[in-house]
Structures are given as C-alpha cells and as structure tokens.
Length: 291
Image 1: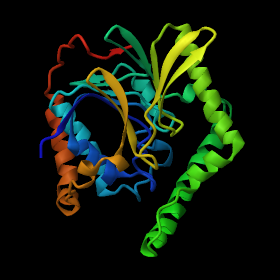
Image 2: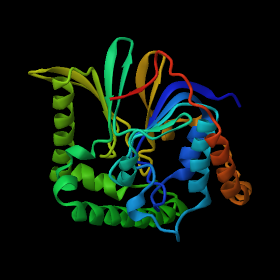
Image 3: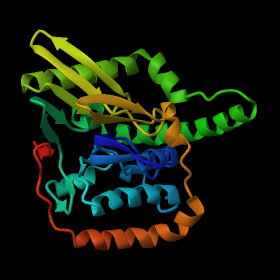
C-alpha cells in the first residue's frame, strides 16, 4: 500500500503507558503516512502514571516506529508536556534527527507559527500540581471504566459513548476552562506577532480564526489519542485536523501484534544503536527552528 505523503504531522497527548492510550489506532495511522517532519507536542509518554506492570507491546511498537523515522533521518521534534515534563531538563538535546525543545517556531509561506504544549497556561498545573496528578489518575480510571461499558454496549449492538466527553461538554466550568485557555494562548500569540499558534494539553482538537481588539491569529489544537484520535497535518500549503475515525484506509491496516511482541524490545535497541551512528543533517528552508 502506498503511504500518504504529509509535509508535517503534529501529535500530542498520546499518553503511552496508560490504559486509555489508543496505541493500535495510532500505529495504524503512522503506518499509513510518510511524513517529512514530525512534531511530538507533549504528553507522549505518561511518566506521571508510568508503571512497569503496564507497558503493552503495542505501546512499544509506537516507540519503535518513531525511532524508525529518526533512523531514516526524518526530523522529529519532541516538546515535553506536563506528563513527561522531566524531559524538559534535556532542552536542546540533539541525537541524529531527534531534537528535544520546549517550544518551536516555524516560518512557512511567510506566516509565523508558534508551537508549544500549553500546560504553562493551566492555573491548576501551576498552583495545584497534586490536584492535577490526582485528576490524571481519575481520568485514566474513568477511561478504563468507559472501555468496559463500551465493550458491553458493542456486544448488545449499541454504539460507543464517552463519559469524559459528556462531562466536559456538560459541565460549565470545564467549557469555561477550555475557552479561557484558548483566549489566553491567542492573546499572547497576537502580542508576539504570530499568525498561527498551536497547542495540545486540553484534549480538544480545534482550528479556528480568533479576532481580538489587538489583532487576529489562527488557533490550532492537535487533540489527543485517548478519545478524539486526532492530529494536525500540514500539506499542500494548509493545515487540517486529521481524525482517525474518518480514515477508512488507516483502519484497515493490519497490525501483527504477535510477531512484534517478540521482536519489539530487540528491534528497539537495534534502532537506538543505529541512531547513535547517524550524523546531524543539514536543515532545509522549511525546517522547524527552536524558538
């Protein structure tokens, strides 16, 4: 099968290592595309909730696929989020085509784009970290319960439902939080003369033009791979929101889990050793640059 070529792919909030992570679906998507550059915009590995007792082979396969892109010299930029924040101490780390940065700026077609995870604008994260971590555990538990309910619902011939989506859409404070987050991000982007601003963090995919008395900016959010299964793609000189549920081609890709289970750990180490021997590549005119 010919892979779909994409100039830039932005993924965030994958949360590898948690029960809610949809690793199989993500792997199907990654195997269906041929990206020229990849931005991992935070919360890729959920270090907050990481446990040796739960690390499925599919999660390892996602890591292996990403390392495979690095081995092929595809630029991969890792912007740590709050769930993998310990990687922020490695800001500026560069290995082959992999680079860890806290934020990125991209100038493309004369337009300036600002990319960051977004947790720095979360009041709960800044002032009540223990509450945020407790909420993360509760959210993962809710997703686990939701999966059990959906399993029974599908067996009964009914559709899937999302508890957390219903809660977020039905609770005024949750809707207000998302609106405040987007407003704050856009205000700061406008003040810094950006044409586009891109985040993750709030698990709410979006693409919209925001106008304020100070100016206007296009707000983009890549969503997540827990419930929405979305990403941002740049191709043919425009940004679009990718949705796995609307991609019949990706959903038909077979993932040989049994074969990969035996080979994943060994292949991962082999890819790492290969990557250590890769020399730094020269950036081209459209290369992302650390802001």
